[in-house]
Image (cartoon, rainbow, N blue to C red):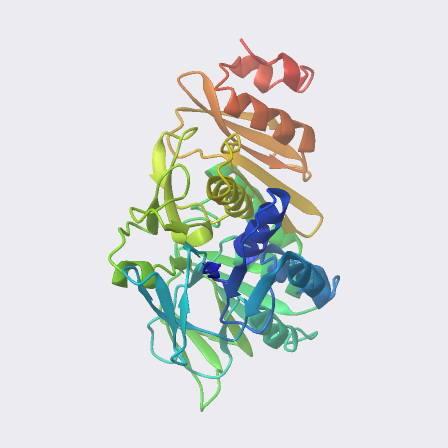
Length: 406
C-alpha cells in the first residue's frame, strides 16, 4: 500500500527550500507542492529590486529549475487554491473539489499585502507588489515622465521608488508615520534614507495620511490631508497580513501567524508551518514573533526537513534582513526594539556608509549597517554570542570590530 505524500501548501521560497533540504536529508517519501500561482517556488526579494529593474530574467527567480522537482519525486500542483484542511482525515480539499490525503502537512502560505479600504481603492491604476504578475504589470508603467505615487515608506515602497526614479519616473512617497521604514530601523537610519531618496529626486512626505483616490474609471488623483496629487499609478505598500486562515479554520492556534514550536510544529503533530505565515518563539530574541524574512523562511524549512527525517535541528542563527536601494545596501541583524543605548560608527549625515548598533544592558542586540559589510558580519556573530561590547570602541572606526568585546 502506497504511503500518502508529504504535502506543502504554498509555493514560495520556503517551500522550495524545504524540498531541497529534504533531498539533502535523503527523504525517501513523495512530496506534493500545492501553489495558487502558475510558477514553481520562487524568490520574492528580487521582485522589488533586480527583477523590477529588468536586471534579471524570470528564470533567475526560481528556487530550483523544474527538472529538480521531477528528479526529487516532487509533484507541483500549480494554479490550485486550497479550500480547507481536514485534520481527522489527514486531507486537504482544493477549491476545484479535489481531495488530497497527506502523511504530513506543511503550511507555507506566506502573507499578502494589507489592502487599503479607502474610496477609490478599486480604481484601475491602484496596485500592490507581491507576485511576479504584479511586478510585470507595474513595470509597464515605469516610463520617463510618468507620475508614480507610493503609499507606504517601508522597504518595498522605497525599493520600488529607487528603481522607478532611475527610470526617470516622477516618484512621490507618502508615509503616514513620522519617518520612513519606522517598523524596521531606528530614526538615524530613517533620516539617512529620506536624505538619500531626496538626493535622487524622489519626493518624500512623512506624517501624511491618504484618504482616498479619484478618477473616471481609472486613477487620476491621490487624496491626502485635503490635497490632491496627480498620479498615473499608485502602488500600495502598507504592510502584510499572514495567510493563516486555513490553519484557523482547521482549529490550529493562530496569534499573528500560525503558532509553532521550535521544530515549526503546530499543536497537531502532523502539521508544520513555515515562512511568513508562522509565529515562533525565537531563542536568541526571547520572544514570540513572526519574521517576514527570507533568512527565517529558509531556516524554518531546514528545521522542518530535519524534524521530518528524524535528524537534529540545525543551529538557530541570528535573524538578518537586507534592502538594496540605488548604490546602497542596508544589512540588518537582530531586532532593536528593546535597546537602551545607540552607538553610531561613521557619519550618517554625509556620504553613504555607516553603521548603527543597538545595545541592551551592554549587550549588542542589533545592527543596521549601510554599505558596511564587515560591521554587519561581525555583528551577527556578536549578537549570536550575546556579547557585551565597549560602546566607545564600537563607535571608533580606528578599532577593528573583532576588538570591541569587553
